[in-house]
Amino acid sequence: MPTVLSQLDPLLNAWRALAEDDPTMLSMEPDPDRDELSVEVRERIQGKGAVTEALAWWAEREGDLDERGRVVHLQAVLHALDIHFGGQPLQPVDGEGERIRLVGQRWWGAVASRPRRPFTIQEPFPHLARGVLHREEWVEERAVTEAFGSALLDGALRVGLCALPGSGPTAFEATEVVDLDTLGFRGMSVDDPSGECAPLREAVAWAVERGVHVLAFPELAVDEAGRTALRDAIESTPGSLCLVVAGSFHVASERDADAVANGSPVWAVVEGVAVPVCTVEKTEPITTGPAGLGGDIQQRAEAESCTAVREHIQPGGRVRVVPTPVGAFSVLICKDALVLGADGPFGDIRTKAYRSADHVVIPSMNGSAAAWFWGQAEESGRHHETATYYVNAAWVADDGVDVAFWSLPYRVGGLTTEPEDAGGHARFPSGHEGRDEAETSRVSAPPDSGRVLVEVPLPTLDWFSGGAR
Image (cartoon, rainbow, N blue to C red; front, top):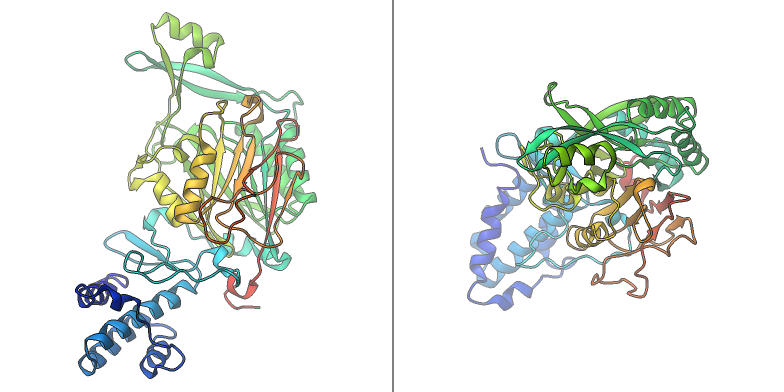
């Protein structure tokens, strides 16, 4: 049985074939308000069964049109379908086997002033998301929808990034030689000078005070004790929190109880309770020189004649895309955001996350200024129109290394950020229509504060709430 979107292929191929000898016909469009056939198409495909109705309409009308009429009105059918599906919230539709296709409007498309992108032969469906996921990768939980009621009522999405100054450093231990001259290592614990996980509790208090909806922490910076303290702090005073990316650490893999993964839990906060939604497991382990970790690990590496050390984890996680009323979220842990072709069991993690989600959160532990996380965020914003929120562990960040930053794919009116004097203002990928190229500096936080708050207005709440308002 053909899938919903594959049924569009005959129409699309027919349109291309008819115009092959005369490409100028591709630019011909009927007046949608005056052309009777165009009005008929628009009315026919409203509601459910839009594709079926469009196919039926074309079968009925094709013989009544001359060549030009077939090109122009077939394009009108395809464009109407694009607008129809592009005006709905992101949703999965059946694909082949266990695959699903994602269609619908991205969250920033709710801004009324955004110009419509043209329907062209190079990009025939510009308003449809074209992510392809395995069913296991689309994590649809009722708790997530329930959690975001406060964000809809507030009229804005507030994202808090906490690099945890005062926490760490993370203590690592050597494991075994994992590959010729490479020694494995894993995290044991996070140093807690306060004895009460004070940096985590302070981060939650900061988030609650500012009405944060989505709160994110760094990679390898929240161990088991930290997770317990974090959950206790959230459930004691949840405020407006809706979704929490609770940092990552080396823990037993959900996919293999005998293996260790670099896992980041994602919680929805529902009626004051932190409800587990999923765990994201890192795919690409980090490899560095023994001197980078020093101490016992460096000595063990020298004793084993190893010239490199590598994070000893089970690789090959899978992307997780969590739909919410304010767009779909995904998480890429550190190096997974940099490596194109970092394959999990269902394909390239990075590409899937950026093509399928509206918001990508990147927990990181990176001490290098040359890691190019910012460049990747800009690239993905430019091509896939995805927002990026990056949060690094404060204790590894020297001068010139980002602690936290965020990037939106285009300018949103009324947007605010904090701290106002910590590195500039919003960065928007260059080369996009309507951007002010003078505003090109990222928002980042110095290690001593380690916190960035961004507030994005939701200008069309009817869209976000499914028309419930």
